[in-house]
Image (cartoon, rainbow, N blue to C red; front, side, top):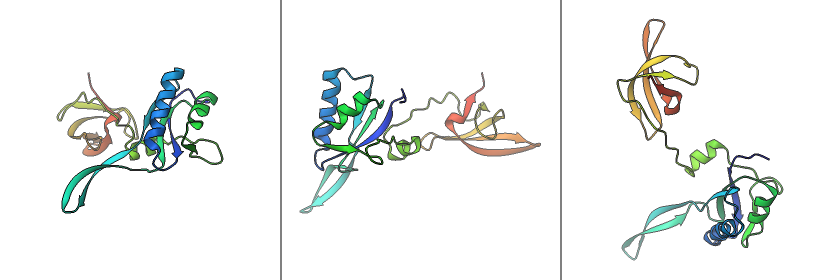
Length: 173
């Protein structure tokens, strides 16, 4: 058992997603399980529907029949979620819940990672991760939406622009 909260996918009866999410949140409150069950989400998107020549914005569930729960998996937390009315089980082989990978969490947009950028274009930064670990270069461009930074490093006497993740570089003090 890990003591890190991970995202799990809970299967529910279709149409019960919000009811299940609310019931889980109520169980967390009533049983004081805040340290085990951190967050409950029903992923939705806003879509524009045109009906009878009228446009209207509608919130639609991205994964009907599923609720995402960020929790530390223990016998207690499993039991509480599993026994909520409307829950048919966790997603995973047999009855073993499998957490979403970091990549899946990012791809699904379940958690938005905020990375503090303490450098700007023109600043010198040090690469702290990856194959260029230890190199120092100058920031050419920052793309906060994509989470990337373009840095020019000096390699074998040549200036080489490289694209890195924002968390792979740090500002020089």
